[in-house]
Length: 113
Image 1 (cartoon, rainbow, N blue to C red):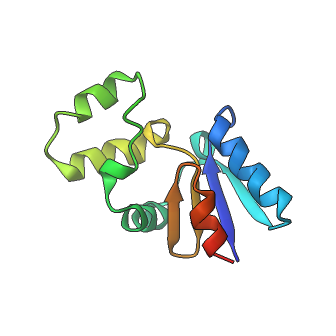
Image 2 (image 1 turned 60 degrees about the horizontal axis):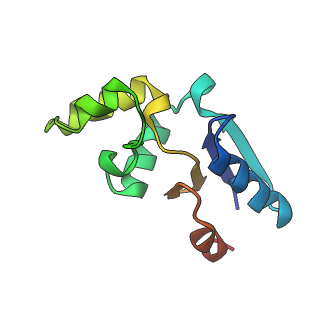
Image 3 (image 1 turned 180 degrees about the horizontal axis):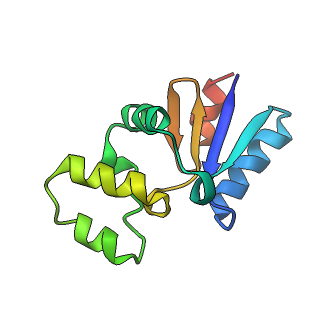
């Protein structure tokens, strides 16, 4: 397995995901989403893996950008906005090759073994 965790340093679910893999002695790479973001290819892989931009956006965020995106019909504009501002993404984003989860999903991760 080649696990990557993209998350925010102060995110509780990101810390739970790290603990999940540590407890099972599964090596992973932690990437600070706010500091480094996602590359274009990683972003496309994540979008395909989660089923589109609406599954990647943190709709519970108090950001005015998220409030505006609720009323946007243009998928490409949403993707561009989220790519430019990774703080709008739900975390953790956990990748194992082309398989991707968003949020804390231990049931899915158990199947990756």
